[in-house]
Amino acid sequence: MLSVDRRKEILNELFGRGSVTVGDLARKYGVRDETIRRDLKELARNWDIEIVYGGAHIRDSNGTQAVKELAISTKRSENYDAKQVIARKAAELVEDGDMIGLNSGSTVEYIIDYIGDKSVHIITLNVNVAAKALLLPKATVYIPGGRARNSSGMVIGPGSVDFIKSFAIDKCFFGISALCKKRGIMHPVMEEVELNAAMLSVSDKNYVVTDSSKINKTAFFSMTPLDAVDSFIVDGDFPPDYREYLAQSGINIM
Image (tube, rainbow, N blue to C red; front, side, top):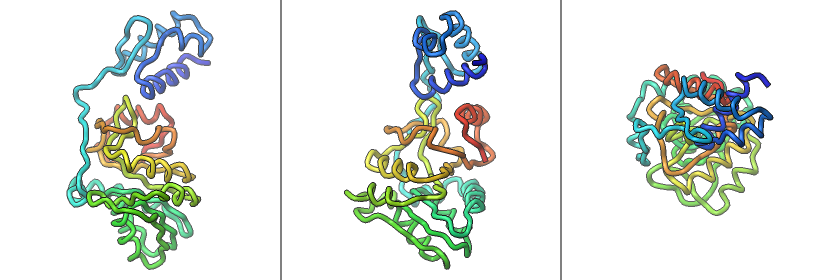
């Protein structure tokens, strides 16, 4: 393995786990400890990595902010223009006959505005999204049963995960609350995590739709590993270091 490829894998492991040890990496790649130490020193030149005795870890960033759940009415008014651009791009990817998955969030809602008269099947976790999608002239809409959460419109019910997993989704457009390098995609509400993960697990292509306000943020709960995502659809202010971070995980940026 070339050193550049080994370093990409080490960087992904650092972001995924938060820390690595020299001994474990040397055994994994079949190289000497000194080779791994050189790799870590090289990575530390360009990334926020601290070299410690026996290994390295991602530094805790004081600039990373924890997010709390916001009411959907508040979300709709924030970063409106950026969300419109993202939603329009996402809708361009929808084709006649597609089964698409839509989770929760204002950006996800706005995608419906640009689908037009395409013939689509929509499976959603959210009553607000479902109500809006029912206005489309050629859409068939599916939603699990249960309790709808006031703040988000997300439906929570005992059979919701099994309901979602009974579908074969072509494309999922997925709003997020937080993304940070150390912990990946995160979410502030525990009871919504399992449903979101279930939708991603049954989709052929997964597109995260997010404006830059969700970047370099943390939340209480990990949502999904980055390898479950194919592409991010973002605005023009998406930070260059996060573009590189996602590229290291093989994720396309639109």
